[in-house]
Length: 282
Image (cartoon, rainbow, N blue to C red; front, side):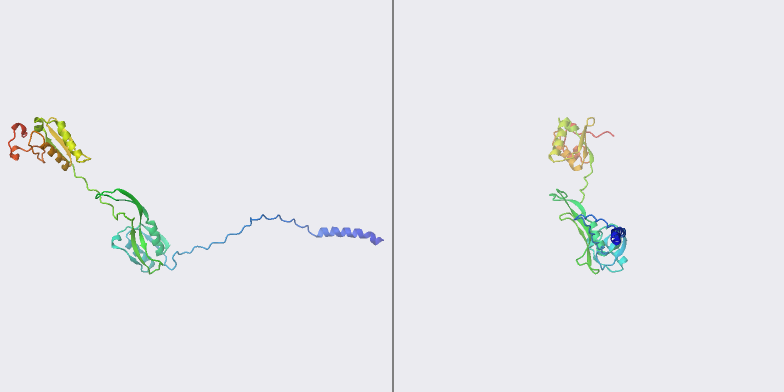
């Protein structure tokens, strides 16, 4: 009976001891969100050091100049021959300065061709010599080219490209206009014969307009001396000579040097004394 009484106590102590020995289980972690799992991106392979493997790399500090100077500097740096053809008409092309490190010949020539490209504006379609009507745009470039695949023994050639239809050289400048001169025309005999200054100048200006002159000479009448002063190109001033020859009070021929009517002895005609201007007194 005594043993049966002790049995409940033994069971209670066993439960207490087990609770002290066994650890408390950790709570379950919350479920992970679906579709948000992180996957690291694969690492990219590093770029190759040479775009054209197999070529010698070199450094170059080119100050600028013709293509032959660049080729000579490249061969000095690589200590290898370079096969290049430079047409004579392109030999004086001015190349820009280059300061490059660790490059190969194809890399240098590719970059030079791209850097030389530029937009150009040119005129074409002129109907008359020296006249241009149409304005066009295009791309111009220069550099070195060769056929693929590129090798160290490839043959390069220098080129200069311009848009189709563009002139290879700028048009020559228009010729300078003839210089202007100053001439004097004596209108006294014509005024004595009944002509008026306004009628004479109007006839001269009308002739210039009918000839299509856009820049006519300047003329001015001096009342005291009866001189018509004209400033302009020699060919345009000849119109004044022709107008005066047709006016009443002649015939008078104008000396192209002095602008004065010639004397009767020079004309071999007998003119009324009143129509011939008297020479100035010394």
